[in-house]
Length: 161
Image 1 (tube, rainbow, N blue to C red):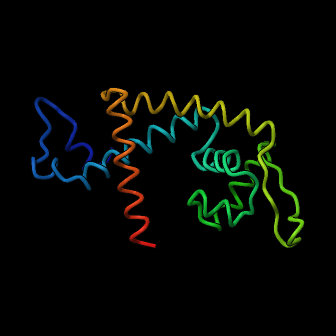
Image 2 (image 1 turned 90 degrees about the vertical axis):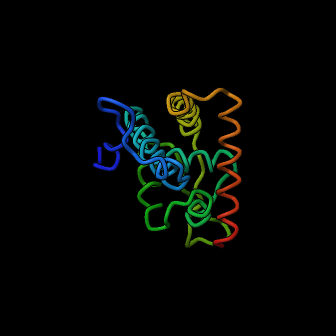
């Protein structure tokens, strides 16, 4: 735990973080991101997976086969990191690589039957982890939170493009 995180942990009373800091959405999002990343990364590690594995498998399942560049664009994984992710998935038999019939210099990546089964298992793992992350919220509040976060992300993605 970082010193900044420790400041928000109650010791013998209420959190010692000043109210003006607790009202900053950027700070709250940052702190929740830290906790969320830790929870998700540790939970996926227990399932012998990483978040990038899930992202690639989900992309292939939803949008179909794609090149490494297309997968990078779909998932936000840097192209330089995508090769390593795909190597890990291919070693486990979760994806298949084949030469692109339109351009033999690149590969087309496809999810394998084993990859589909693994994705379903990771869906269950992530559902359980999100239940833990969002425990204090009702189902309606969870849906609203996702809607608002999506709206913010879409807005900032459009304005930064």
